[in-house]
Length: 116
Image (tube, rainbow, N blue to C red; front, side, top):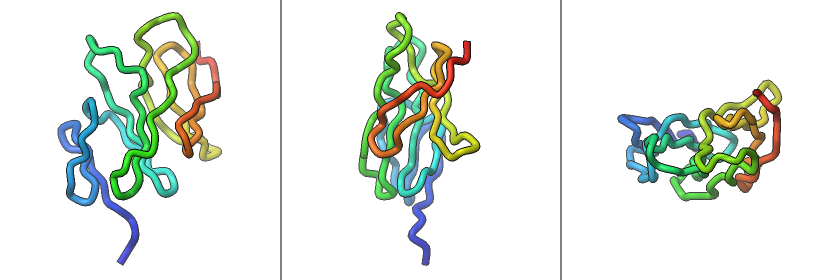
């Protein structure tokens, strides 16, 4: 038997071990990172929700919610993608043109690259 918890996304809902996990917006992407699952949710276009990345334990417990992007003057600046780079660093891209490395322990961000 494995300690790995299976997850899937179906119609924007995250399922962990066949149990739905309720998040404030539909799930856009997930990323397994060590003992946690990082989730990028996709707020509706008319909703301002800038802290749209979460970390859950393998049991579905909320561990943290990402820090808001400190750059840009726009009010609406959600994260748009989530991935690991070639060094294993967790990266969240923001539509304001900045990619941030995420501390997977607490959700704080630091600039990884200015893309625009």
